[in-house]
Every structure is written in structure tokens, then in C-alpha cells.
Length: 177
Length: 300
Image 1: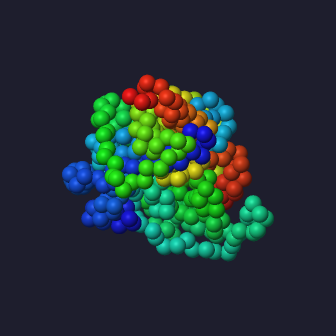
Image 2: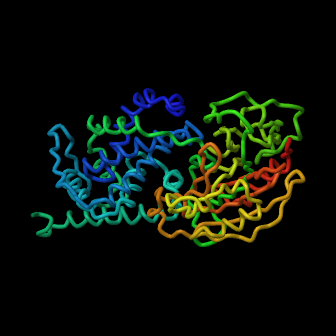
Image 3: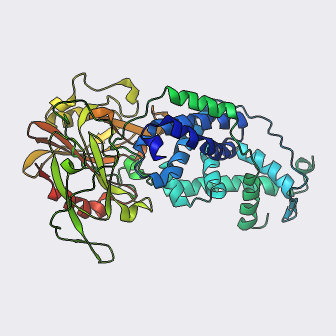
């Protein structure tokens, strides 16, 4: 990383392979679209290269990279609202447990739909907190947003996701369709 | 969905299901772009993780008080080619240790005496200062360097001092791509003139320039903060770029949380800019430690 920071493109190339996957995983979960996520990751990788000399503390490389990634996700999210149908086949090996009587498969479907109704801002906080397990204070620092706002975004997002699951768990025509 | 715990579990399970690998063509495209993309030099704006300070927007002293005291000085070297962002350099030359400072727990922290001339920062006006040994020096280039208190940095509670040479002010820190405020370099201006020019920044609230002296050299102190409401529309999303320093360095902040103090000094015919900043905690909490370093500055 230090070599890349000093302008070594070859070193950055080596860094970019695992980093690209690492960032893409996060971008895909934020944007919920493979193409948008790949575009955002590509953009983030270039930004990371360009701004790498400005990173003061290499120990914070991951957090700094995520910050640039989320910024790229914002840009991609604004660019277009094209949501792919996101049909994913679940492996039969995957556990189909239940949460409070609702199958996880249905949960996933409902969560997916509910998540797409959230803004990129809200989804980013959910992903950073529940996927990367970052504390709210760290997300606040990473995004440059007050912790109160982060807390509020998370609360709003979780309320939306909960509503989707709760609605699904009721025996309505919508739920059993 | 009976509890928050159930919901969190469902969300975690849902998030665990997603694509894992960036398609090769995107990685290749990124690396192709890297081949034609130059890196930005280190700047005093190097990333400081910080909590956003709503103060900047609402004028309240707040968590991410980013206070800046800048000692930049221009025209970094008098002759010869510019040196591109040198890497880590010789460690500071400790001299007779000044009076130790106390950590929050009351433990004495040794202080060392450093000089810019000992670690490769080729400022046209070298200077020395006393700094606690728990602080680190980063981002050394021909035009700037930063001193950060690492005892709090791990919790994203950064504060420190940056110094660099101001060459140009941007016309609009949010829309910095619109160019510089003046065609001629601000390095040729007096501190008062620069402070007057800063008032032209749209979306910023500028405090009145206040006379200051550092090591007997006079100048002005300017406090300011950003009022940019929609920072995502800035040319660099969420960030404002204030100035360009020598050697292509620049100073960049989260546009929505900029609260800065610049100290512009005229030293031996050069414009010197010192930036003292704090994030995640109000400046007032950090000022004593920062002021100690500022007070120790001696221009050589």
C-alpha cells in the first residue's frame, strides 16, 4: 500500500484485486444492482488511486476506502434509477430457518423490496452497520455526517424494513400472492 | 417479527446474500484508468475521519469542530526543482526536552523539539516547534505537513496542526472546478488581502480578521465555516476545496462541516499559513494542546 501511495501503479494493481472484491461486496449491498455496484467500485478504485497520497494514516485505509466507495455509490445512485429485477436463486443448501414464523426466503424478498424503497443514504448506513459491523460513531466519521443523523437514518431504514416484514407476516392477499 | 433482535438477525442474513466478486472487466477498466490518472499530492486536507459537525451548518460549536490554524508559507524553495512529496524522512532531532505536557490521565508526556529543516520539508521559511512525542507527523511534502495527536486519533478524534504554503484560493470551494479566485497567486498578497479575498467565497460565513502574532511576526486570524446546504452537489461530493498550496497540494474539507481557523502570517517576505484543526470534538477542548505547539513556533 505504501508503494502504491508513492505512485507505484503495479503495486496498486496488486492491491486492487482483493480491494475490488471487498468494495464490490459492499457496493452491491448498498446499490442492490450488480452493474451499478461494479460502476461504483470502478470509480472508487480510481479515486483511491488518485487520492492515496493524501491518506495520512495507512491503518485507516479500509475506512477511507469505504468512504470513497460510498461517495461513488451516491453518484451511481443518482445517475439513474434503473433497478434490475434482482432475482437470485437461493441454493438448496442455504438454511431456510424461520424468524418469528416467517421464512427467511420470504424475509429476503420482502427486505429486498423494502430496501429498494430506501435512499442510498439509508441503505449505506444499514450496510455499514449490519454488514461491516461498523459502530455508528465510526460510520459518522467515515461519512462525515453527524452521529445523530446516522442514528436517525438507521432508525428510519430499520422501521421501513420492519414494516415490510410485518406486512408480509400478516395473512393478507398481498402477502400470499 | 417480534423484536429488534429478530429484525437485525433477518437483516444480517439478508445482507450476507449478495454478489462477492467484481467482474474482471470492471477491474481491468479501473486499472486502465489508473494508468492515465495522476495522483494528487499530499495536502493538508488529507483525509481526517471525523464526525460531521452540524455546527458548521447551524453555527453551533459542535462535535466536529474543525479548527484550523494554518501556518503555510509560500515559495517553498528558492531554487532547484520541486521535490515531489517525499516519503517518510529522518526522524526529528530531539533536543533538550522542553517541559513535558500532561496526558488526560495526568501522566507526563515528553515533548521534543523539531525543526522543519530536519525532516525534509523545504519551506522557504523554516521553523521549529515543540511537540509531544505522542503526536505524529504525516503528509510531509514540500508544501505542507501535519501534526496529529495519535493518542486520540484512533477513535477518529483527530486534531492537529497543518502547515503549508498558500498559492491560490479557489473561487468557489464547493464548485472548485470553476477555478481560482485570482489569476495571480495569493502568495504575493499580504495576510490582510488574503483575508479580504476569502470573503468572496460563496456559501461561507467569515469571521472578522483578527490581528495575531506568532514568534513576533504579525498576521491575521480568520475563522470561518461553510453554509453549503447540499454538499453532495459539490465538485468533489461532500467536500469543499479551499486553496491550492505549492507543489499542487490542496486543502479540502467536508463542505458541510467546515469550521476553520486560518492564521496567515507574513514572515520574512513570505506568506505563511498555519492551520490548527480539530474534528470530533470542539476546538475549545483541543485548543490548549494546540496552542502550546503554536506558541512554541520559532521561525529560523
